[in-house]
Amino acid sequence: MKKFWAIITVLLILFFLGSGLIPDLKIYKQNNLSQKTGKVYLNRTVNDDSPFKEIDKKLYGEANDVENNAANSVTSVIVDYRALDTLGEVTVLFLAITGVIALLGKSKKNNRILFEKPNYILNASSKILLPLIVLFGFYIFIHGHITPGGGFQGGTIVAASVLMMYFAQNNYKLKNNRMKVLESFSGLSFLIFGLLGIFIMGDFLQNFLELGIMGKLFSGGLIPIIYILVGLKVSAELSNVVYEFMGEE
Image 1 (spheres, rainbow, N blue to C red):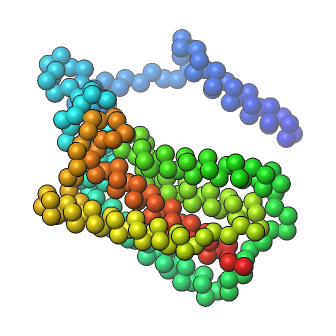
Image 2: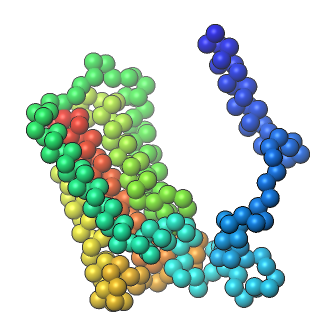
Image 3: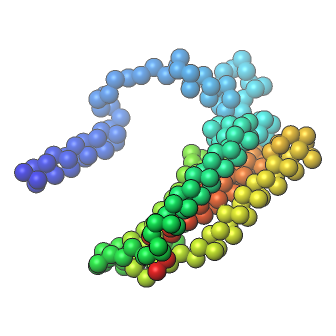
């Protein structure tokens, strides 16, 4: 019976993957996007193809006169227009993790959680996967202003690599003091950039750096810097939670 469902699952996956390779195969209902809100928004802000608004056209990779030149509109909201609220979210995460660590510190007595026999495949591949996962997490929050993702997502991915190492090796131990330094540095830097915005531009976390060209890595002014700091802080905080859960010795 298991083989039957396995075959059915494989056939369904091949069917859906193959259907996308045949352009004339009309399986799904055709959807008219001309009146959709997202279509109108993209036309008005990024790639306006209207001949009546040629002067307002913003081309990806070429425009340099957009308000903050961040191609990811979600990031523009989170790290620019409501950056103070994002600082509050980071603070809430810090307080929540502080509570978790305080509770675990009293209950677990620093006993390390050990596995009777760690998975051989995971143990053998963890040393190769670790730098790749960390690199992917860094890529997510470094490119958060031009692609989907950002500091919270990238930081979570980096922390997941720490959890993987604890599962793979019984003798693995996170250098917790370094994580605390990284967490403190990133949080303090966030506040410093916010205060610089007040002194230079008049508002907390106001963008005061060169905006660059929309779609390029070095664009968005202060936005990618803030997202990198958020990613480092989130990765350090969640790694500390993993460290407290798994124990020291």
